[in-house]
Length: 178
Image 1 (cartoon, rainbow, N blue to C red):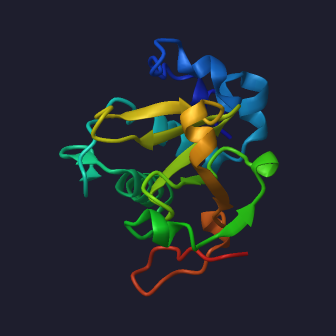
Image 2: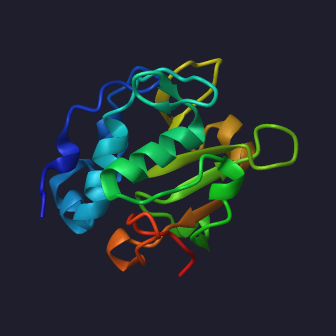
């Protein structure tokens, strides 16, 4: 098991603070309690902090949008094929309560009218990483307790661990509700 995977230099969050101090996996003791696949997923996601936001973006070279970022991270870190749509992502996996969220869970928001239009990856301690918007222009770590995100939070979902998932026709593990 990787014991220090989350002790990487995560850079600064939007408030200019060291984001690693706020993450569940940032202490060696807590990092040891996370499964290796989740440690890898979270570390991989955080490694893209600061990459450009672009609507429809699906890779670090050109930039990400929110669902493109989630799709890319899960695809590269865990070999899981996911859709490129926040609404479609909100239909897979198991719905969980906010109090049950763990690093690697997906968090969903209604930022445009009354439909789910934004997704991020939960990091722990109320932090999540996401390709924010054209306004911020980057992949960033935000706090669920910020008024903006609290008022728009809609639901959280947990995807099956890749080792538990059935292979899809393309050979990548398919993701479904437990």
